[in-house]
Image 1: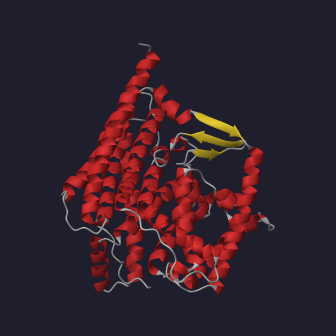
Image 2: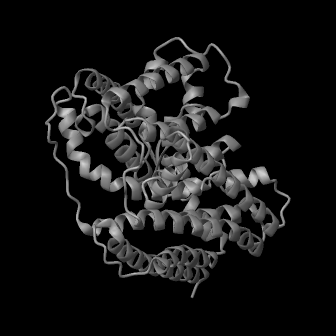
Image 3: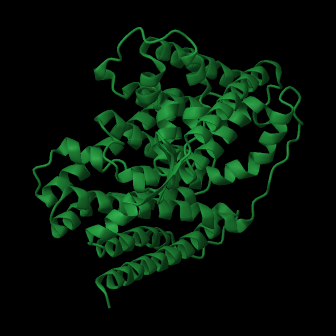
Length: 466
């Protein structure tokens, strides 16, 4: 048997074993989830400890199986192989069309917010923002490719105005985007954005004025690359996708392979943004669980205003994620016995977490987006007079498997990307393998936490305006 055939056989065995582990984990975890409340049943047939251990064990077993692949050629094949399609004219035409759709869509959102009905999930303003943007467009971004640079209406408007009056302060890096993202998440909880188109329109107007004026001052190219939270949101999620845009057209790569590129995360503020993407989904899941609701009620009874309780939990949890991540990087550096700096290792190992963020997002929003998709179409067809009882899809009970699969696949892909990065950074195979243990422990912990939150079902967060 040739060396290439032996290598292919070994790789195939590892992938098959990983698939078996993933399938078994999804089966047990999803069975527990269905029993624990995703379909409304209260007959828990699988103990919670077994359900969590199975999910965490699936990721841990996948990590061990991944470590069997130590051939740098195999690793490089997955991450370096790409099919390029020179299609500059086609991409330019598509960008023009998407740009027109983006500007028209922003106009429809504004007009519907002003003249349309002030009723939550009937309004085109609310549905386009949360169903169209937060859910479906984001899912398309990490499963197919990132259309936002062409679709972004604020960038089109800013580019049409005189701009570039000041140099972007280097000290700012991408911290404005981090602060803005956390602010949006907080407002989504404490303000009636999903139930009041007027409130949502006010936030969109403030954001529009802020981002357009910033782009005019610092130039659209600089601002939307570094400071704008929506652009960074879609750029980060788009790095998980198989289709990547290049200067000459499009490039088809294996899913997640772009996450090992060293130019994706270039400073600590981008690490913070990645962690904020993971944390905001964890936070949104936590505050609607019985444990989260009880925690909030206890803090409010102590005399803390609800808006400050939510802000404290959001910022405090983000700070905890930041601390845990850098502690894992410290342990990684110790185990690898490397002279590479803590800062550089932190930059390189942050991108794999985007696969986890994509898995979390799918679990949280795929059911929401698909069930309300026809409501969005109804509202866009008649933005000023949408039907009072919009159409909604009722998803089958087995759809809970898709949500669980999203979490587990995201973590397993993150493990593989971290494995690849470690072999790029460290020359010795054992050194590369040892370096991964701290991050694997963190990923297993994140898996168990996210599965626990999903299993608890949803309650209405207390003290939230309707």
